[in-house]
Amino acid sequence: GGSWWAYYTLGWGGWWYWDPTENASFMPWLTGTALLHSMIVVEKRDAVKAWTILLAIITFSLSLLGMFLVRSGVLTSVHSFASDPARGVFILGLLVVVTGGALVLFAVRAPMLKDGGVFAPISREGSLLINNILLSVAAATVFLGTLYPLFADVLSLGKVSVGPPFFNTMFVPLIAMLVVVSAIGPLLSWKRGDLVSALRRLKWAAVAVVLTFLCVLLVKMKASNILWGGGGMALATWLFMSMLVEWAERVRLFKVPIHESLKRALELPRSSYGMTIAHMGLALLIVGITSSSLWRLEKIQVMHVGETIDVAGYFLTLKGIENGLKGPNYIFSRATFVTKIGNHFIANLQPEKRMYTVPPRPTTNAAIRSTFLGDLYVVLADADNRGGYITRIYYDPLVIWIFIGGAIMAVGGIVSMTDRRSRKSGRY
Image (cartoon, rainbow, N blue to C red; front, side, top):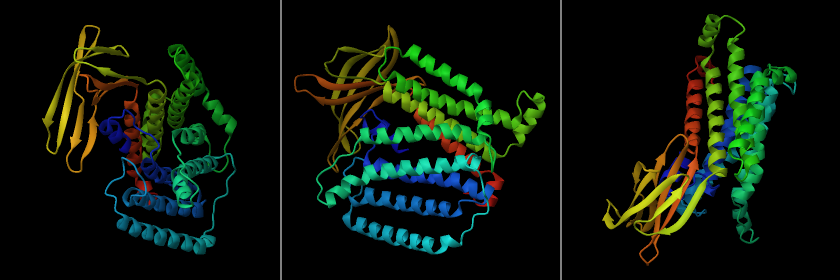
């Protein structure tokens, strides 16, 4: 939701920038995802109970920490709002009491929790444990990168800035390993699995991965970061195809008559479908992140009325600019771009430059034409005092897949929660 708001409202053309406030909401999401997966192990194998409780404490504590960072004013961010130091002190006190009390209770009661299930490292439980480790390390990485500048400032170690290069370098390899494990884990048996057998069943997924990588090399031959792009697309294909293979294994597709496979499909628990849907949504999310991050086209220039610019095959002509327009609580300027492909009219795009009155704050309102293949993103910036206006025009390939993938992941979670067994077991 925050990424969608940043993309459509802020007008800077991006959907994520590793902003401290973005990170504050991302950390509990990572640990919460680990928590949901560890709860499956508790339900199925009566194992890792103490670890699951600790994850629950950490997830709630990180939620309180995020509220403190956003509301207290300790961070300077476009996402922070309603900053109030007095409120921040109260939230900090609440954080200390809740987290400290929970950890003390955990230290006292955790030794009483006995795990009943024993499992081999190569098993479905083992894959879920690896999932937990990778997600926890990823959350710790984000935590360190977000709060280290604050600690350094408090300890008079100087001003330190931790930006996207650090997070991308540390975070991306962890998520890549997570995707690989997530594809294999569902094909392993509980208690003791056969890794060779699972990989053998994924042979068609591996073929699809190779074909995807080769197609990216062919289509994006002249693009920069082609190997990174091919790797990202290959990972998404690996995860998506593995979910199809896992579902086909469950219904014994092509191994029994089709009517029996259909019967098996209808009898599958909704929690199983929820997992499949959520993981497929993650695959689509990876496709959108890879494409929009590596192959975005960007043009920034000063334009005068009547000028035309070409971006990714779109021809945008600045037809006019209206100044001094009034909104409910802001004054704004609005440009009109006639957009064509060749001689074929596509749309009139009208980005705005707004100045809010209370509090005084300039913002932009981008004009976006979204398709499944990519977004044409137009921003009107400041005048150059010589009759021209600074404009920023982007073409973001497949960026909408990020939001579609996120929505599909949410649907997967909702489908899982509707499973009667999940409700009875208290997993959610």
